[in-house]
Structure formats: structure tokens, C-alpha cells
Image 1 (cartoon, rainbow, N blue to C red):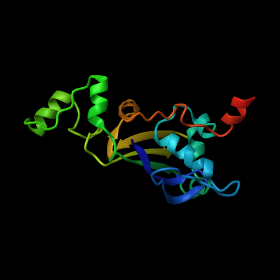
Image 2 (image 1 turned 180 degrees about the vertical axis):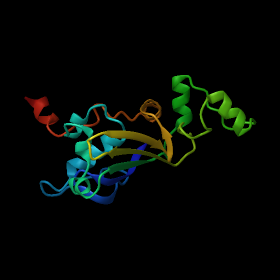
Image 3 (image 1 turned 90 degrees about the vertical axis):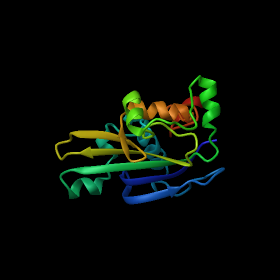
Length: 191
């Protein structure tokens, strides 16, 4: 089973610098006083995994995710969140068989031939069945004028949101699924 190994936040909401939050196998509890940033860790996770709406991250617009101290210091500011998954227990071959995908253990073709056929660099965007770690990063650059651009990376290689979501589906990770209960959702559910 895939699990999140760590979340690294850089200038995200209440996290002014770079903070690495390790998430151990099993049951992890994040506790602290009100206003200490507990919910911001979940917001960062959803941001990185490409949640469609900033409202789910308790922000009016994406630039609101930038730490306020960072905005005051520079003309252009950048938010970065990386999520590292532990794939050591992932059964990629079983998932491929269930979905009808073909998984090849080894190939005889050269890297150039592979790139020509697939239209992308070999092994960059596709989750590999025998990988132990897989890292997704999302960066948001905001100019002083309020314009912004968001970019995604898989294992350090650029990708688009569609490619990211395709690979997350292969891992059965759904940022907008029922496994994520956002702040305020419990109240709406029980009333």
C-alpha cells in the first residue's frame, strides 16, 4: 500500500521558511495549539496534488497561499510543496493487470526509440513498479502585481496537471476523494 513519507513546505501559508514534516507508516497524528499550522499541512498536501479549487485549501485565490512575510520582502514570491510517497509496498504489476495495462519488466529498445514511441522521456512521468520513492512538487510563482503561474514536477521533471493526476490514479491517490476530510466538512456532514 502506498503511503506519504513526507511533506516539505516552503513559504506556504504559516510556514515562512522550509519545513519538512515526516509522516511515519501507520497512524500519524498532527497536534498543536490553535493557529499553529496543523490544517495548513493538509492544505499543502492538497495544493501539491493538484486540488482543483483553492477554496478547499481555505484560500480565496492561489496567491493567498504565499506566506505573508515572503510577499513583503520580494517583488516575486514562490511557494513550493513536495510530497514524497513510499512505494515499497506498491504492487504496480497487480494494478496494471486490473486495468489492462501492459507492464514490461525489461526492454531491449534504446532510450531514443522509447522516447519516440511514447512522446515523453523514458521513465520520467510514469510511476515505475519497482520504485521505492516517488516525489511530486508543485511551485507557485506570484508577481508583485498579483499574476501567478503554477508548475508541477514528478521526481524533478516538469509535467502538467493531467499527467500528474493520471499517475496519482495509478497509485489510487485521489486529492478530492472521500479519504480527505477538510476542516468544516465534519460539521456539514452531521448537520
